[in-house]
Length: 156
Image 1 (tube, helix red, strand yellow):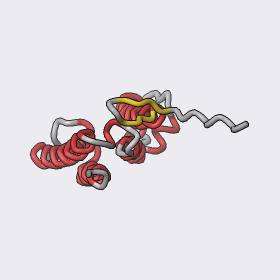
Image 2: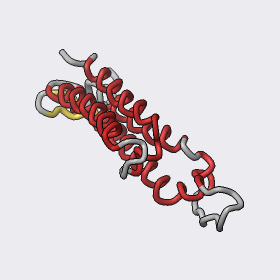
Image 3: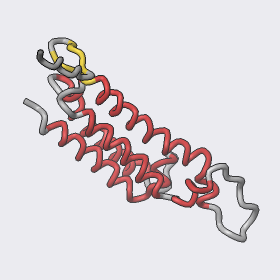
């Protein structure tokens, strides 16, 4: 009597095998990165940038996040980059066929637009995240372009 084959968490969609778990993880990582940055900007940034001894220190519901200061941006964008890199796998919709081209060109364009917007708005511009990152905006734009190259390696 033969042992039954283990079921993989995949479905056949449009003639391709798709891993629901990998797709969900990729989406969750990107959303988690966006939420991390948003929570830092809305709740912990004021306490992280407060000058000690000058005025009243703002109340902070997330003191551990304020202690990380600018590292919160690295964590948030890192989660976004890892999520997009996971999405470049052939078992996700973005990792095969037209999805690869969409992911590759999308990441390249996001990186280019990020850098150009930063240069046009300047370091003291009105865009909150860009104002906080200063010259690290270049790393953010180049990071998106690097993720675009992970999609480019999957292109057939």
